[in-house]
Length: 139
Length: 82
Image 1: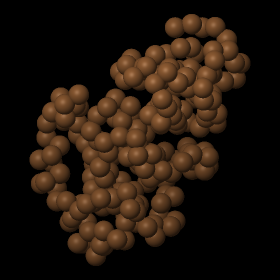
Image 2: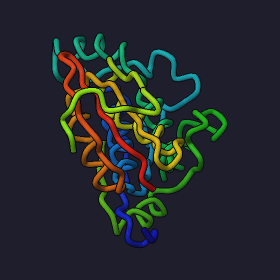
Image 3: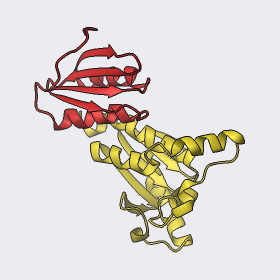
Image 4: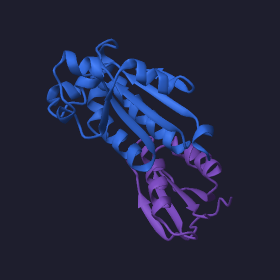
């Protein structure tokens, strides 16, 4: 299928908690299965969760759902991480992960500080321009 | 598509215990690495894969050979046709 005919799914990962980052990994996989181009824009907390030294930060779960949060946290121990899901999707398909330039500047991060899955640093304007003719999801 | 038990497979992948989209991604990877004519069987305990893998086959133009219920898991069999 020509590139111009393929559906383009762009996801903005703003949140840094596992319960919101898993959907990014799962939907990227679903996008690959549907032969879509998938772009992920990591910004703010979502970007911090992709640091090489994210440590404890990468295991946070939103407390918005009370006791269900700890049930999810417990269950997630048996799952590949959201970054593993993204890596797997990228290996099998047309998946591109980008870091938000503004967050990088603000938090004084370099591309080298991030997981190698992140391939580039781009601004919001450039990302939205590339995303405008497809579907945009925010997590 | 046959619902018969025990369709022959070239490669068998045990993805039991993995969750959506695990078994489907295993299938996509295996089909990609296979030769045309190879038959891939994925064992799955993930209920979503029963629907996702056939949908993917339709989309990707690969042949769904069988979905065999094995009690507490499914054996999903796909032939690489191109």
